[in-house]
Image (cartoon, rainbow, N blue to C red):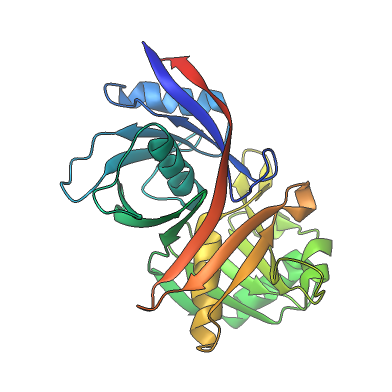
Length: 277
């Protein structure tokens, strides 16, 4: 069966500079096995399938697959899926707000032209790492750490602050002694001649050692809760990610009037058509 399909680029306004996402727009009727098989075949970090909602409060439902497992929630798949839904005729029940149903429940997405933003989910684990883990992190990174905390909103992230953006970009981690770490690095950008305030990198266990993610919604959401939580006067900032691997992602963080933290980014769609599934 021919189904509408797009490949979106998330957290960027220029194609091939962000984090790619495959989206099957007409996901109803595809078996679990076929979803998993197609997601494995695309070989992207995530592939999503849009379906009719089962919750009356939702505008649409999404299922999110990596090449090996299904995820209850992920950041860049949320924004890319919402963009695909809107571009293919989706009309939200409430203007300016889309409600996505996923494995983690209902997620609210704000719409503002090509820029979309989701509300950061709560952390399931927070607080400083213990001394032993702190020492392990410094050994893995090979540099002194300014601060390190659990910033886990599901995937298991540990957030590590380094001296500055230059240090973040120069790090060459050695995960041989800690192969299970899911690590996010952040450092402040001192150069005023830029559109970003902090540099972010994300490392997670892959098929052969650790991979570096181009732009990571879940990590940026957890880092945002950490940074804004410790500085009540900070209203928001822009994170730059992907620099070390030739990307130029931008994540827009904003503290809402209601106290919610919004994680936003532009989405472009360089590939659209149909797929036989």
